Image 1 (cartoon, rainbow, N blue to C red):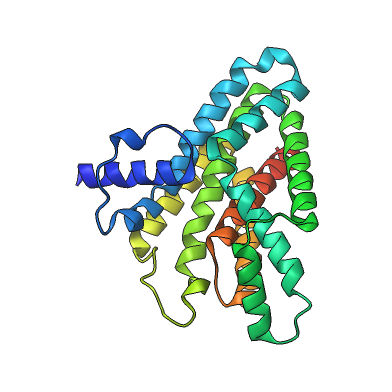
Image 2 (cartoon, rainbow, N blue to C red):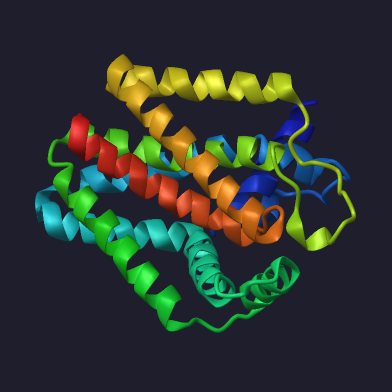
Length: 257
């Protein structure tokens, strides 16, 4: 059991980051990818700890330069995976929102999402999100604020993937219902409680309640949007959700904590 959990965690690390851990992976089993989904919040914690440690080491460089370097590391550690998802979603939504026929809109959106080209809407969206993220990081002036933000943002963002997937269907199956990646409700509730406890221990009960409510609202809106557009989700939708959630968490910490 420990070996399976370890392999699932390593699988999640390889999938969501560019950390050099693939050498320790064994050949994935049939259920490795399913079990790996439950490790996403733990991957977020690993990312957060790395970023927080570097931010502390760079604290003598000043708020602006430190924030810029931490953000650059953030992008490097994740390989811009989630930024790519955000770009694809923005391009696809803009390309499909004028289609009046639902099936044509769905096909148009999925086609654009699959296109590796980056349009003007995607470029502007990326610039704006990175600008807001950088500004929020630079506004976390105390060491503890910075550590809390860098740990909670990636953890909450990757936790949000679990209920999103549990409540949705994968859009590219086109009528074929796949096995849902998140089916263990007990495991999902346990992870949610552990993440909530981490929030309370880090920023207190009131701020935690605001964070959880805001992330839940974003999750509901994002799922509703893509359910209406394509009848489910794609990997790009999940990547965009991660980026938007991370940015939202940082903004809330700057605003209320």
